[in-house]
Length: 450
Image 1: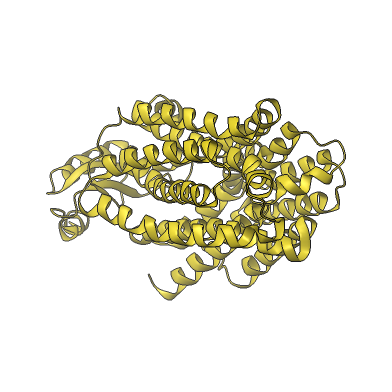
Image 2: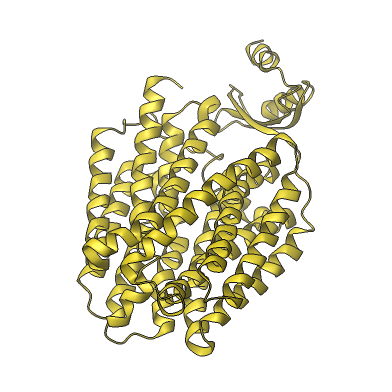
């Protein structure tokens, strides 16, 4: 990447990372804090945790489409302001319904699609995949960091203070947007990162993509349900004071990150993605059974959490890669839009469902229900087709019309290593799926320049 692209990618990653950090810092501590709110019930605690997912799912694709019409930065500004307003509402609330309202407003500032579109505007096609990977890493790091520092911040400033800090982080995102993120010279549609409404039916009814969409929904549902119950296990079953929870989470999360790396490397280098993928789902089943069965042993709970977060981190890194490999070359943006919507819906269902289960049947029931759902995911994943180990490649082209685009696609398919080729005349881009071991980029360049 050149200096302009590096500046664009890292500044946008910083904005999204700050937003994710603010969104998730309350997860490990909110259930205990909510006990002191007016009108609280276990179901409403779960709803407060997960409601952001519902509003995110509703608004993220429409916000992306609006950014095509009104510009990327105005939509991102709107989203960050909504996120800040929601944080202030939650910080000032003294009832559970006030927090639910605040979290819903936070989620309505759904800027993911607009951010990805701006990223595409500011980077060349050949750097797009790398840019999106950097963005993904920043999101993953922010999520893990949020779970680590949330309990530490709670001990110092309380959950109200965390919500105020979240509002400040949103405003810091605005500063980065206007001071560091360049203005796009030309705003255009990018089907590799944006949703094409005409493609939704094809993506929704694709069996292989459905398995992955269902998987991310289940994974985030389980994660959100766990945090309706886990703080009570640490305080009431293990006798850990609330201000000491951080020292339990920190080593477990740090070691799980280290445990993730060799599994991801093995899956990629040895081309054992399906085996590692299904193995991690099985680890998730085992971890939930452990957390539900032995809640009075610090070691057992620690091991259960280590297994869960190791599996979670591997699956979180693997699922977007699998979506990219299985989606048609020209429909990756639509596939990722459906995937993200599924993820947010999972957070909502898991939060509300976990709260209800804990209130109706006890906190053990939450973990056992998560184990059953994870087992269902495992059975679904066993039918997953092993994806071809192909990479996405994009190149700018100049074609006069649809007929010329089809002719060029046919010629591109004859190049060694090219498994799929789609040429979009409106975008002036050819989308390819290639085997890097056989693919020669120079042949594509020579064909286009001929």
